Image (tube, rainbow, N blue to C red):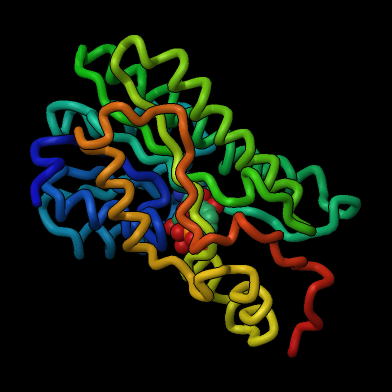
Length: 261
Ligand code: NAD
């Protein structure tokens, strides 16, 4: 179904995992997509795979000028900027008392700062073109659920949820929606290495009532819905897609298992 036909989109972190699945779902739904990522090689491969409605652009989301020019480039390429997905992000697993200032700053700069720049400059293009749109921020269950050894990531994702709410509040009167998706465990290059350890896998799966990971394609399908007119009254909220894991505690990544290797 071409529910996004004729729309122009930016997806950050689009060369891999969840971002790539969202970009794929958007192209399949009729949108043109500017794929932004730091990883030039993976970006080229993803853009080639997605065909003529996908354009790759090397972008560091922690650099405001690069984010601003990516938003402008998407508007020029597709005629309008209608959808922005701020997906690029990562965490760091270390005890709170050990995490270095540099590591803390790098997580905040990309996972929180990149989302702020994406909302700010995505909204500015939408206001300037006089055509409203939707901004989707990829959060995590860790925006609500503290995780042992994950202070930097949890703090960044809680910040993302609040940017979503503030954005919806400030921009709603001008027709711009700002929504979030909080995935639970999704098997992607980010999590695959952890999940190779059988004990870690068991620990993760044990806290998911549905007993399985979420597929990246499910996040893509949810993003299509949220970007479409079917979701025209949804703004400010962050929707969990997590197989029910928020009903339980988060696995203790530092002390919960003795790793097998
Ligand atoms: P991934 O590692 O597969 O993909 C992340 C992409 O972001 C990579 O292509 C990477 O090159 C890119 N990236 C990193 N730093 C960047 C920067 N400064 N500028 C531009 N691009 C940059 O990870 P993923 O699992 O697909 O995660 C995507 C998002 O989903 C992240 O925000 C993550 O926190 C969130 N998330 C993932 C899971 C999960 O279980 N995989 C769960 C909840 C939330």
